[in-house]
Length: 257
Image 1 (cartoon, rainbow, N blue to C red):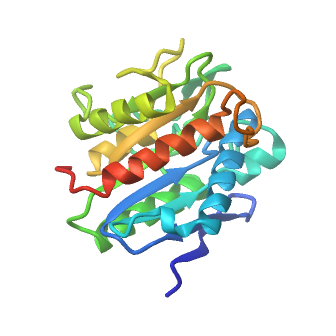
Image 2: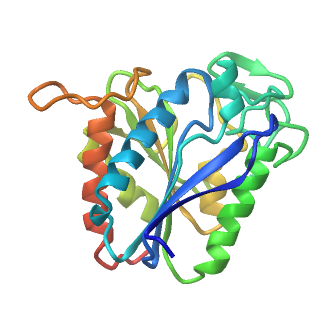
């Protein structure tokens, strides 16, 4: 089995593959998700593709104790159509089976009836991602599984948010990792979403309810994903690269997750 390999976990509503690249064979599982929202948030796809390319060139940077999974584009139809939702008009971060799920949801463009989907996991993108995550848990029942979902944007500082429980209480393991990541990336840290709309049926909530350690990372801008030459201001790709390298080192040590 090669150290790095790429496959598809499923397809979008429009029939486009949901690609995954795996690095390594370690017990601890780290999952990086991009472009759950399409449109301007597809810079998260570009960032993860740049990081993936770097790791393919330098696979020794992934610790032996870690398996890394990069799924850079979970809403390929939305990226192609330049829209936040998928091809059916459903917000893929409002379609998860949580106690607060609603078929009618809010977002940055206001209240959108039907944007939560007909039922949880009504969309192929969330259906396949859920099935893949649960299969990963079944295959690694005792291992920590950390899932970072990248979004954009929360200007000017960026924002890292941990998963939370039914009570609204922040998950302790997720909070520890979120604070570490925010420090390393130079982003803000928060325990609740600071936008002017409510979020229902959210991935990071579902992750906590199902035993994963989940984080949301909001990039500070919607710019592209270029690497910035040494001596210049870091781009969000550089910031998150440095944060991930620090996280790799931290996860190489046993964690009480």
